[in-house]
Length: 116
Length: 472
Ligand code: SF4
Image (cartoon, rainbow over all chains, first blue to last red; front, side, top):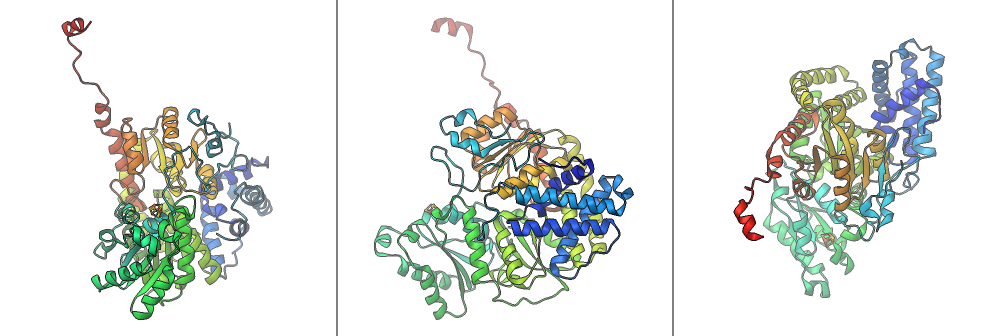
């Protein structure tokens, strides 16, 4: 179960559960990369910082982050009024919750197989 | 309420670990059904064999490739013509399948020579075809036929042909999923990187995990064409063998079916640095999101928005017409695995339909993580379910329609519940904007058709009174 009592993080988390395939890639390493980078870039977009998109992988993270942000803005009116430091905190908490679900405490027995 | 022991499973209580009923506040850290493990003795599984996963799902879709099945004739027949994936190549892949038709003496004395002769005969009979996949099956794997050696000999003698081998007999894994895996990894090891594609656009991608079921690939290809994106390879809908040898040149792998083909997307990422972008191409809203992400990747968002606006104007009114009429209907999905997570939320959001039970034949726990994250509370989630479990679940959830294959479909028809072919579709394609309207129409037709209800009505005249008295 989600650990935070912060209602806003819960809303963001529920959104990701419903929509985002990137949290559940095949293995721990790619889940972790997705969750960390996409939540980071989403935070940057929301606080008006241009994410640094250099590599092909960055482009993938950016594509996922950008449309997550668009959806979040549409669903949650409060986001627009949130100050930047709060956005950073919310995204960091969201990242921790997602990592806990999809990596650290995932009961998927294939998550750490090195072979497919 | 966590995992559920159904009444019919009292004699095989191990099945409890495969049946889950979601309740509010729980997630997959608490309960995650067992999946991709061996079928429990005593339960009649509806899974396919591992060879089938390689041939019927992925390899057999290629439009210019002879499918040579090294085994008894039944292995070929069982995996031929049962999936509707057309191609623009004269439907070669639907018309033909080759078998070495192994008989007892070949099993006793070895089948290498028979395989060699069959390969030569097939190429001679079809001189315009220069590509082939050779599959082992249970008997030829057990007797140790060296299909790679035979293929090497043929390729040395005939430099104009290219042959791929899939060594995945039916018993190689617990379900058809193993066949997907073996073909994916074998292909990236043996074939990717051998052909240089002609690059015609600044934007190139692979589209992975779409098999052109009733024209899905054709429909999506129209979108990519309008966006000016070159698809280097579809893996494997309407694709050629050589398209798929050039996958290393794409800038991104866009993945629809992560179960059957996530492996190759990951390998392309690890070996060639090609990022993997997973999308849902079933569902109106999802398709728009997928197009937006692809367009953002290439920096062509304006084009994407134009396409989405045009398609929405054309198809959304039709979709909404069905939504009005389908709202609140209940649906069960009993398919392979990924369609459960692709469909459960999209039918809810786009059509107002509630998915009340889902069963996966070959999904892994990764699929159940996605399914349970997206699925409703109060819905049943089953892995590798059997017939009796289906009956018991149907009694509990009473769906209006079931999306499943023809075998289970015929079974549920006898209960007078309509079914829609969830694998090969009734009247597809189902992907994309137009496709989801097709799905809605099939759903509407299935649930509005009075035939099944009428079939359940006993229309015999009551026995005349005199006759009943005489019988007493
Ligand atoms: S289980 Fe073995 S023998 Fe049966 S169809 Fe599959 S490969 Fe052929």
